[in-house]
Image (cartoon, rainbow, N blue to C red; front, side):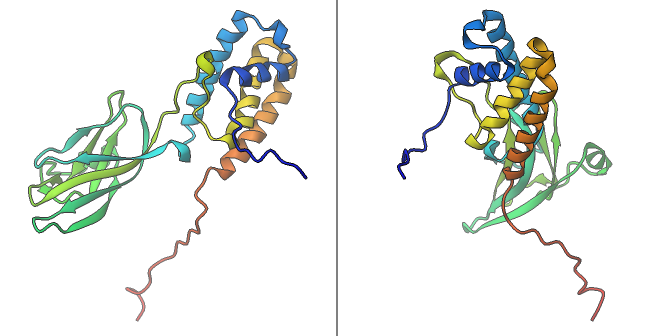
Length: 230
């Protein structure tokens, strides 16, 4: 058996667009400027819709924010869709470093705190998801050592364009879902009789990819009964 020995398959966006039109029954020689303009809009709308299906593991990164004593609210990159896990790293005067997980609270929970200016080691955060998002900590960081807020977040999927042989900001295992998804959206405009079939293929492909878009670790949750039974 002779194989390629390569793992370089990474089609350009333009190739995926023409393939999606082929799935609709539109040949490459039939593609007009109008088709390309609509395809460009459709693929970006679809990618942003995928961004709402968080967490997408390939979009996760870590942010480090140095905390200032007495400052409770910090700006967040507007590309941030979701904050997953957050912890505070504390370095004391002797150089000892310790991490402490902090927990998310809602706007209502934060509003219920009677003393929002209380200073201490932060234990909770409120992610205010506005056009210009922020994170507010409670208690407010004090001056006892150096604090860093570190959090993992999901970021927006990068825009897609067909110029310059650009490729997608998605893993290889999502290529089929992208092709069928784009074909389904194009069929809705140009080949309505094929839309239902392509939409079913797109949904099936998306489900397969999403099933793999997880961390493969065991999860065990059980009650701690030591305090109740001796």
